[in-house]
Length: 446
Image (cartoon, rainbow, N blue to C red; front, side):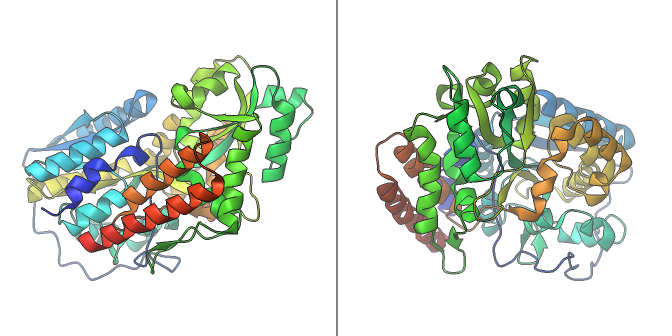
């Protein structure tokens, strides 16, 4: 087993509080997903056989309940396939357990995975190429069914023209705001960085601060750099490019709220939904998947809403959330086929719409997003429809070897700046040095 196992076990901080990951030269460049090679057909059959598969996930609350409902429906439609759902804590826990299971040769049949995890799994032959299943005449999808998955989600799951995972729970960051406070201050919803700064100053009153950021804001540095018109990384050269005038503007912008006392991070609250719900912050940037958590935190104490991310020179919104991969270690051909049948059901038009309506995540299919049922739901729940408005500006995090460590290193340096341990300039320089070293190390370990 390659050295990546040790690296992955050490580099799990970045995924704990955020749902994220990336594209490289292998992502599709055209508007549709080209079918790679003609399928020779899946030789395996599970007709008349009882097959049990295990799905490791990190869903809780309403998300876990929705997953159970979809799984129960699948079992009713496919009584010969038993799906055992196993919750594995948060994403960091899930990554560590998947890594340990792979090392022991005891992987689950399928699991939620981030793209940068899959880069390492693929290089070690630990996840299944799903392309033959997608192209299979009997069990697969038509080209239209494949292309029905939004392009940014398809690209996010392609490696050298092959699909090693498929999208499941996808979200983007949005701006949460206390409508009651904004109305009282006579403010419109901010759409630019400058408007956010101005609103934050006016909304900072008493115990309430104007702006908030998740503890994982260091992972969002890429979004801010892109919004400022800069470049975060050169993936071909494997060199980061955020130590630039645009990078400085981005980190200055985030740090500025902390420095002038108009903003804060979640800190010991862990997630901003709690201080926002208490009225401790008037606005914050967080995942659209947090809608149900915010609603619970607010508990009807005030009116609140969400808006697309404010921009600087351009719009940019990271595509967050995990995909689903099928493993190889200790997994039979029958289990792989059963897992493929389950994935197809999990993200079909009806279920991806249901999942989105129950959880706040995005439908991964265009037909689901455009369905009358989902449109009616969004009309009654307009907060739900905001994230999808940003898909045209969507991007995904780098996923090359070493990118998990790179993201952790950048987070660490951004945190140092926000805690007044380093200047913006020093933090960017140190982040650049550490990030490039992580990418070099990752390249050497491939």
